[in-house]
Image 1 (cartoon, rainbow, N blue to C red):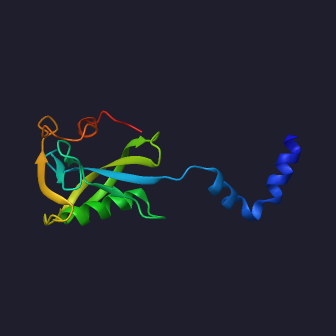
Image 2 (image 1 turned 90 degrees about the vertical axis):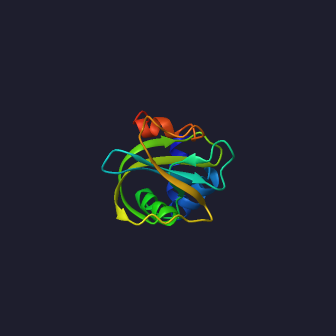
Image 3 (image 1 turned 120 degrees about the horizontal axis):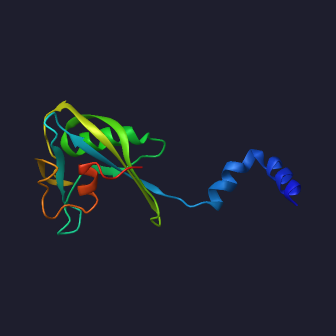
Length: 150
C-alpha cells in the first residue's frame, strides 16, 4: 500500500503543490518588531484599531505574500512611525491560532524622524522594559524583557 501511495505521489509531481495547498491550513502572518534604541528603551505604540484597554503594543502588521518577515518588520515600523530599523534575531514564533501565525523579531533603531501614521497610530512612547503602560498587550511584557523565545 505504501509503495502504491508513493508511486501515485510521484505521478502527481506536476500538481503536488496545488494538492498540498488544498489539503493544508492557510494562515496570515502577523509580524511584530521589538524596536530598541541605544539606551535600551523599547518603542511602544497606541494603536487606533486595537480594543480599548489593550491599545498599547509593539509595532506590528501582516506580512505581504512572498515577503521575508524581517522585511515586514522594517516596512511596518517605517509605515507606522517613519523610523528606520534593522531586524535582528527571531524572538517569538506562535502558532495554534485558527488562521494566524505570529512572529516577532528584535529590531535596532537606525534613524529617521518620528512621524506617526494617524490612521493607525494615536501615540508613540519610548519605554524602559520595567516601565510599560498599564494597558499594554499581554505578549509585550515578555517580549520586551526577552522572556519569549522561538
